[in-house]
Image 1: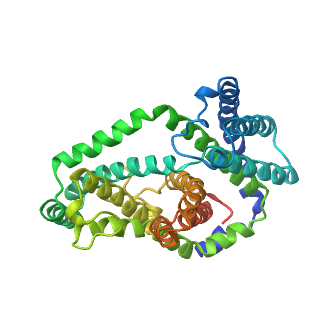
Image 2 (image 1 turned 180 degrees about the horizontal axis):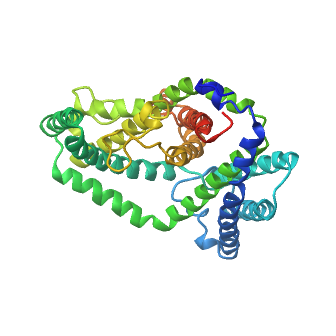
Image 3 (image 1 turned 120 degrees about the vertical axis):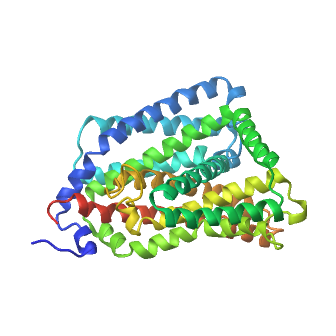
Length: 388
């Protein structure tokens, strides 16, 4: 008997089929985790032999390990974490584990994800992501308007009108200039180039943390009973709306720079064009992140809009939304604790610390986004389950 209720369909009436599908992804993830852990292990040995080149001695931005441990202890922790990752990844890649062992492996993978995040996670990861995603969002927005003008003229005209209004306000009121745009590009590019070695280490550590987090999720899902999936699907709309709220305070604060009442930044009269550009680009990324999050529960999150070339009307592959969504959630969660420690630490300014963590609520946004994406994955599982 089939059912048309999407919640009921996504609640796994046959947990074995969902477990089998989840188990299929364990080995590829384990192999990826093995490579990442092996690289970290090798680098940790080098850092212990030559402390002068250790990223824990002169971090780009501090991780929890560099805040709480000396460089040698942090390198030893990195070595132990990498070695443990090699062992567990080898076991997971070598054979299929039973349900009790899957629970143990999932717990171990979760611990490794936390350990990698503790050792390498810092604010630089979220900063780089914000700059790059903001720039991509601006370019993607321009492309979307151009395509919509041809294939969906009414929508394209409305979007173009909104863009022209935004440009007019940005240029004539706020003082946006071409020099400011160039200054943003040169500044971000120069900072990335200058800090490339340190950013590469942070990226490796965060990649390891994210891969182990994905391994933990898939492994635990393969051993699960379906109750968590049922709860996620039942509350997916609420979870998604909460996740979409996460980036809005920052987007609103940066949009206020186009008004006489700028928030969370220098006064409008003192905004340099490059500073204004930076704020608007990252603010655009925050607005885009909120809109894309809502796509997890809107029709175009399941079927591409008909006006899109080539893919219009086709089902959206789950991975197109799930993979970047989980990556973003992981980066936010990794950055949340360093953010809290570095801002709440100075007790003489509690109001400032509260303001920073309300405008940039990584502690809330990250977990909510992870739950929302998880709910989307479980909901879309009904599309692929022939038993429903």
